[in-house]
Image (cartoon, rainbow, N blue to C red; front, side, top):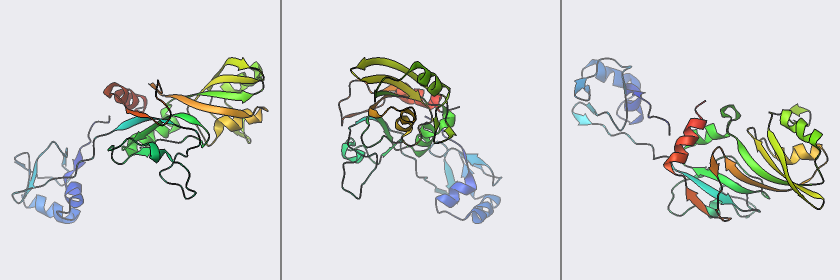
Length: 246
């Protein structure tokens, strides 16, 4: 994931409860702070927590280390809300979290009646980058709608759907097959505003009957069964990191 970042020593000493930033600067000026065996002379000097060694007046300072980033792929079932709790007592995705996985939270959301791939993580920064449209992470869905969507409507959607007068980002959409008076499509988008897929098809007169997300970036749902999950591989984590670096 992201490379560890160096942090100012006076800030770390304050966070660790050793001294206020001002008092930390006094300790530095007094020559009481040693970094990797060398006396710290500048308050703005930085260090890498967990790698560098710091002592203050001969006492080794230990800093709390952020937990290792974990990301799980979960097949969110239908009729389940993307939340950690629900006042109405409905099923939540937390009911399907892997056991002994620690504190996790969902990345983004899927509608109550939608199903498919949902990522869970303990890394708030990664979650933010994955959800932010500026990072252009594609999310792909199988969508079943009522009626036959014309090629003209598909061309309009590809340029960027307009919902309630607001223009949205361009997306990818193609028809897959039809069953009686229903059509299956593959839709990929980066924005993912609230109920965007349902609203954009309804604008063209087509009610969405089913939504199943099967891919986020290059992470695929694969053969997961509803309610089951798997931890992402190191290769998938690296790919997610590259996709959100922009």
